[in-house]
Length: 224
Image (cartoon, rainbow, N blue to C red; front, side, top):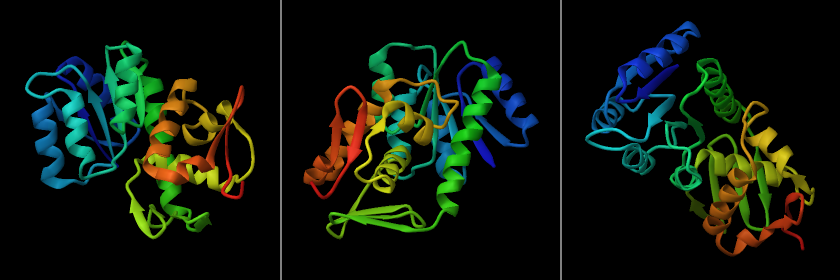
């Protein structure tokens, strides 16, 4: 698998590259945002991107925006910023994971493996889910609502799929984190709530099917 590592610090790029290479990944480096965009669209064959925020020429936010217009490739945002607003902005733009510097290279590799495993499992797991005019095609990774396609990020797709597979079941935030973000994701309720808010918005009136279970989490029901 091929991973694009984008950071203006050569020391960070080398650290990440060495740990990923030990796991058998092919790593391509970019030292600024513009170079990252050029490399990505040159071949568009990357399986995952590790992306810093604060970089010269073009920052990570703009890189994410440009790539998300054409691709749902998994993105891990790697940044020195730890402000809650920055993290929430990343999720709004379609970032799949968010890791603050300084970080453990072993934890980063674990996140990479978990995210890629989720992506590959989704591709291999065929099937079709339908409820209340919503159709999730797990093989094609496509969602339609009333026969109209809905553009979801990878995590939004995973979240909706998990909800529909567990219709009328009250799901705690912990369960959702464990399933959709995998057990080794050290996230919190903000991550889920932000994605649910965005998912509801994209679903229009059907967003009401995702109901808040106060003090616990969420429940999907198209029958109430």
